[in-house]
Image (cartoon, rainbow, N blue to C red; front, side):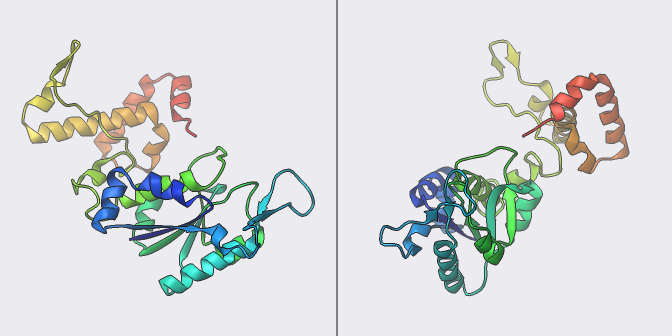
Length: 256
């Protein structure tokens, strides 16, 4: 899978993604990450890519020309008009479901804005998707792009050492992941749950499922509406939610 990031800070992208799991996936050729420096497509002798906004206002706006020329070069390189994602707090919130959908693409282009934004005309011409990682403002689109690429990469076959791990992580079925434990069995008086030491796989799976339901009900009850639950599990969840104070449930359901 190929990720192309249009940015003013290519080193930030390559240094950030060139480590850990994504770095190893790049070395193995499972994913390819390319940082396209928008400034390389400036026709200004000083390589300017921004200017003052029409109508006045604070800050500078990224010009459409350099971005459009960078996109043209990418489209020619890829051989088609690619799917272009613009990171913006005005976009839809990025979710595991969206990550799964995007992981099926061969090429993805991420457009990273900076300053006070990007000229609307070039957005209308090249952007196919507007996505956000949360309701807050960052200085640029590079961090959201790296977050999304990291998440999407984990769904590419071969990227994770354990092929089943992505399937059972948080949000994969609208439930949060169950608690995890490792050695020692007793840490400062806190012991690993007995069931995990039993070797009884069916009991372990049942315990993990129950813990996922409990954790989701306590921390992210909003996710339960879209979860695939049995009637028995729904009854268990309702019982759990009745035990939670209303104010606590509302508070735990809040997220950025």
